[in-house]
Image (tube, rainbow, N blue to C red; front, top):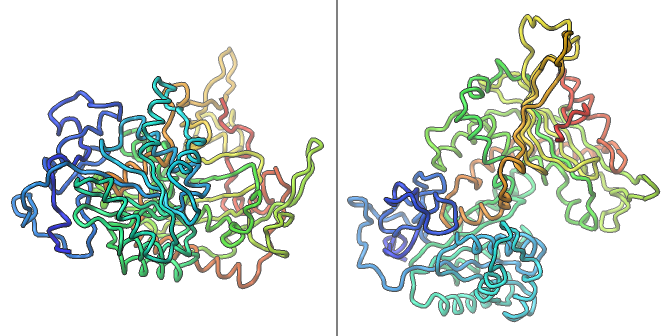
Length: 577
């Protein structure tokens, strides 16, 4: 396909820009005010992202060719605009799976309900299951809810959305099904400029088969084509690199959107706002004032019949190498040149490349065992019939990581992730250094935790930000108390927080890559964890057993103690309000 075709623009092909760029401050629909629709041609080749800044490659179409030369802000060879406007076709590959039913279709409906999807769009489900359009609509209708402010006309909006949903049955490793999908897509596109998004809600072992078949037979010939790829992205550096090379045989890097849904969480999005727009925090964000950072993820349930999948990956690959490491990179990165996607991802890569490779002595692994509590029995991981006998796959891991650069030299970043623990939580805890020469040290005593401040960002559940400070208890005596300055989202903001998949799907449609993982990011992340994963598996290191519903292995506390740290979630002061 000619390079210029990839950049063919149309005045009715819309992108989101900041209201000031649109020449108005009044939103055109219910979507947040910064997502105002203006003619795409007005944006030329640099569409605006959700933060009002240019987004990289938003106008790239389905091509592996070198982009057309831009002359006076307009692609060379761009002919007269086509008639009929543009359309977006969203194909969920693996439409009959749990992820599609529970997350992707509901997120698409929520975007439609909020008028955040383009005027012309179509949703297709694609899977091997034999099903027709009505059966697909019946299947996904049971998962759709009008949770967004519980506003009126929900039933009507749901019916309108379902009428835009269609189904195509086909195999994943052949082109026939995708060729038929292409024919149906063209019928729905009706002469408009076609843009196509494929969401691969399928096991990673068939990613390449689907990309090969879909890219060859169901790509847009004139608009853009993008693929959202779900984790896991390989099992180690070698398999991840091979997956990337295989995908790039059929796609350009700009077409690949590697999704980590944790990056779409509201508190993770707010992390950079908190740091870079508040003078009270930015000067403190270094080894000079921070003694340790903790990234904690826990679930209060086990594998529950998914042991077969989980056993192939384990908690380190499932949570730490992606979710927690991505949050760490955002937390620790230097100030980017701008909020442009590539500037942010460049800084994240620098952090990851500065990190030491993990060693076995810096890691504690555990596996939950059966436990009886309150007259109820909870099965252990090894009791799951889908788990291989004698499995040493960890369901819990704690690790101490270090960033060898000027800002963070010597500061331990402690990660902890596990299943079947005492609570469900995901949070970032920043523990500051003690006050030098503290006048009130006699009142505080020798407890380092009470002598210092702690900033907590609770990602889930009950999103909140709170800062622990020392405070005088009212009265005639001098007694100090540790108190919370808190921002509890449910009290401060009455509207419900959007699901992470809503934000990420909208960004993918708009071409905003800031919250998606670049291939060099992925390489740097795997380089940190691959050596320790291989050693654990080659030596078949036995995980420490811990009871279902407990706080995890005792070894995790010894690991933290090696760095004069105590886990912030075991002090009894967990910030519950």
